Image (cartoon, rainbow, N blue to C red):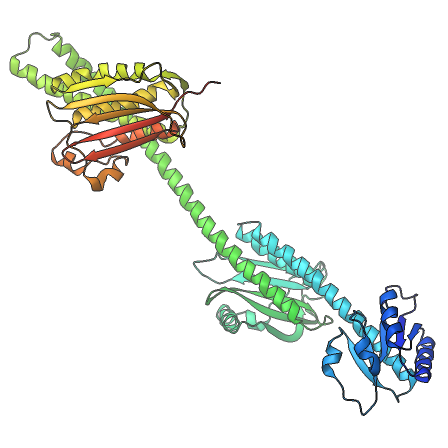
Length: 543
């Protein structure tokens, strides 16, 4: 079929009967066709291949020799011929006429076939255009998690794609979707008044629920809608009749909302393709709204957690400050008393002062640990520099040696040969080893042994690293509790039972610092035998 109306339609006539062939050619020519003819099967096939036609008029005797093509086909039959419906279905559009009918009738049927083909092409083009438009609506719905924007994308997109007058959408109260409504009106129209079926909330829900259960939509009777022809200054009033349809929106077994679409009465009836595409968009709409509601709820929870976390940090900072100020004064006066500033102390009072001093020191360490936790939560910055692991271990061990001597513990240290350096925050790494070694001393009975060692590993599947091990002959950790030792404020049950002092923060702080150095902290323990804590840190690489 030619697109230019000034160009004649093209016809190919194939008929082995010369007289009938000439009659058909003459009738089509008189009707304005450009006509080619084919008297046999060979010339028919050649003509079809050589040039396209807008319609084929083919005698039934040549039907089986007709190549497949997209042009409409008019078959010429005898009244006694059996109509082969399957043969007609082999072509996109087909019809038949009897050989004895006037040649002008054949020309008329050929024009009807061309018109049908043109209408079919038009509908396919419109359907594809509508499909593309609604595909963009679905994409717009999926592009945002804002419920209001999702609803606006829906009504605006459907209104423009369908050439509607009014589009209205609302959700029903439901915990899975937000409560949202939106309306679109064609340019120059005032908002349309909802049909009676949708003016009552309960009736609207029941209608949508029934339609969703039946997987159907419901065209509403044509009626005049208030404002349908209203201009910018129109206050309403009955307008032209409008055809509308109600589409449910749901998920699973439950209906979530409803869409109402009204368009001019002059528009064609709602097609199955249109309804199917609208239902597809409504499915994307339900998914988008549920996702937006879920993500919105998660964001609210996240914001609340962030507020609580900040409040916790502020609280810890305030408490630490308020505790450290009087504690500093207490320890200063204790030092003065022990130095004899108030005169000689009786033996019994001296022992009391020692107890007070030890507990003040415990309190100071607890405050320092809590402050460390607070700083780790609010700042992830590390002050990296080259750190000599052997030197750092000797410093920590020498600092803790008096604590081991007071318990008659053997505290030894063995370094890897040569100089071993890592890129680390020296102050924080010192805190890691101080926490681990002091823990080992604290949980090892008097007369026990704590061994600190370091070595280099270069397994094929890992980067070259230094491993620092702290082994003790202490009380050990129950096997069922080892996975919890890095949890803040967690203390092993046997430590609590034995009234061994501690805050449960040491290993948690060390674990966090090691991870921030791209390292690994591991604990192995046997109850009543001892514990080994290993720290693996990547070696400094040459730049």
